Length: 425
Image 1 (cartoon, helix red, strand yellow):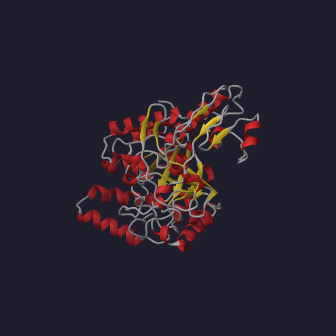
Image 2 (cartoon, helix red, strand yellow):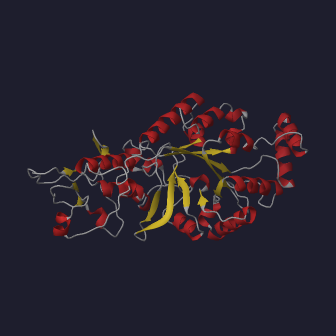
């Protein structure tokens, strides 16, 4: 109901409900005349997590539905009465809460919940913001039942927004490296007989060439008309998947301070910190040391997240907005929405103040996982953007400064990035 801007209160007193002249939604299995009726399944009345047998059906109006529960007796109404044939509230809650991620499941090599395990993937609605579509249709039904409602009382339309997010896993290729890492890269270039790269490395070191990963001037120039958020990887110890420039590097600190003074910035908690709370706390402290600000936005490195433990840790560190809700291997809407929502902690059976922002496309997903060429990637971006625009949602893309180098590996991909952050197609 928050999506529709409706203030509400809950009552189980049927007489009071029937006599009320307010907008009314009857959530139960007995249909009531002259209001909107939504049938109820047990899910929202339960206090324990367990597996539900779910059958997803195609529906001409709602596209996909589950928790179907038609009313047994539908009287011949004297007054206008609206009713649904599935439990929209329970179905939306199941998807938004990521209920299935609390259940036993096979994880991928990075111990992440696999997209292929999801209800949305298995039933072909991963690329559809199904909850937003349902919410809009419910708003239309309420408007039909209560045509006297004005736009201020019922919010049927939002505002389409493009949000550009940049993960900085490697701030620079050569600048700011320790001598050990610098010479290690130099030796590797020699052993590969890549003297062109070795020459570039030396020229970067002596200030005659721009570091290849320093694409920030380009990013800033192209993102003038969209909201942009930078996420900083600040692992204090290097690991297999955490290899940014050392956090005490003057080059890295100057870059991050400059960005944080002009743009929204957040922490990109390291791969290892997912299972190491002390390390996570150190990274938040490093962020504050560099920027002079507390990190209230975050996105997990490698999108590495486990319900509910990751969010518990972020909340303890003061995070207010998280942008991890996406799959690395597939495009689409992990929580079946393209609008922000408050995370509901199933393990404690309560809503939290942590706001979740869902991304639907990532550069590495398009190129490395799906093996798309530039024209096909642009087509995917345009398709997803149209879907988000149709429900007036937030089109959030994940990019990396290293993917915009125009090196041979990423040659031509700037066109995909520019199309993704263009507000009007």
